[in-house]
Amino acid sequence: MLRARKHDGASTGAIEAVEPAGVEMDVQTFWRNAWRPTDLEESYEITDIEGEIPRELNGTLFRNGPSQKIQPQEGYEALHLFDGDGLVNAFRFEDGRVSYQGRFVESPTYLIEQQEGRACFAFVGVDVPNPSDKALLRQTHNTNVVHHAGKLMALVENAPPFEIDPKTLGPVGFNDFQGKIFGMSTTAHPKIDGRTGQMVIHGYQPFEPYVQLYVVEPDGTCSLAEPIETPYPVMAHDFAITENYVVFPLCPVLMDGERLMSGQPYADTLSWQPDKGLKFAIRPRTAGGQVQWFEAPNPGYMFHPGNAYEKDGKIYMDACTYVDGVAFLEDIKKWRRGEVTPQYGANPFLYEFDLATGVCRERKLDDRGAEFPRIDDRQMGYENRWGYAVLSRPGEGAGEPGYPWSRVMKYDRQGGPSAIHDYGRWHWPNEPVFVPRTATSAEDDGFVVNYVYDGTDDSSYLAILDAQNMDQPLLAKARLKHRLPQGFHGNFVAGLV
Ligand SMILES: [Fe+2]
Image (cartoon, rainbow, N blue to C red):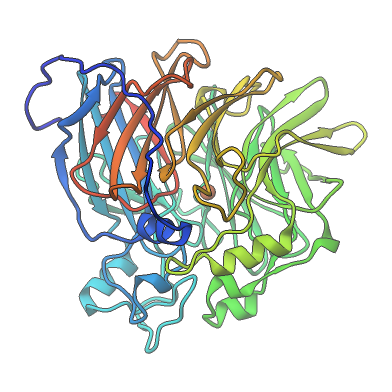
């Protein structure tokens, strides 16, 4: 429940997006500021609100991202962007008001570090002298937070889901799908079927079986737990589902399992092997489903597909793809908070898989850099028209001021024009989450909600857009009382406040 004063209903009007003038900053400072951790676990009502929070928003936006309670000896600037304790942020909406609550995910390795009072496990980007022998590896549930079958789960791709209490954000414990998880982990990108409510999720690891597939029913029962046979271990961040299939990208970014298990930083165990191609394993979501392999015309790496669906004997999937794997891996290895100098980004692509002929076609949809694609999750696995992604600034490529993203684009899968909201230079919107106005409203009738880092004054604000009027000013801008570090992924849970 919201704890503070009642909203007085007064509106200060819509807010113009501004282009701050005269702000001197370089892109490295911007990244360093935006990603620096906090150890604050605050809880308060947000009262500095311009505009009006739509009263249809009733529920909680849960978001996750890396912060860090205890810094390594080298300092936070040595941390990779993927490093850091999971800090779950809960924005609770009710009756036109919104509150904030933040709490670290108190996973076993987090608690070991608090007990020892030091950073005692290797990170993605840095090694640690005298690592603790109380656990094999650091499990930082910092990537996503998902609600399914009555459980709120923090996720990271090197551990099983970790359940937390949706009210207190306090620890509940690992969720191993009634003992069905047979790999070392699941990823942070489950797909919840927009019609059946089934949660489909995969795990990957540097030893066989390299990939594992699970289906969890809406009541929490795990109805499928099988390996997907793949020829080599890759970094397999995300995948896609359709009504009847899973689409699993096998990108040519390979993991060296021996180096990884010897404790070397994850980023140093990856290699780009374009001769292996960009392959896709497509198989039915049912038990014993056989894999049909496809290969794209060009190699590439994708963190995030947008959505996939079946139509006329084909499967269509959009994704944000990095086609220059050399530049991509060079960037990944440099994504440390103190020295980030991004050179390269992903572009939106459309992949078409012909199930009868086994042919995969690809088409680049836009020359502008885009990432963190989201859709109306009610369409997950089914034909969607609209998608949302963060977008780089016009005329500014990677590495230039404003990069990587200060805008959010609503794109039309039917080929219509994109609609863009520009938050302004040195503003960095997190992944856009679409919230339908009601459970039955049209696909784009609702709100785009995210939080934004404002580099001009080093603050954070919650931003709410009308999804049908993306280029219009924000409906509401709710400024937090403290700055949040940049985050990764999250989801809105309707009705849960
Ligand atoms: Fe991700």
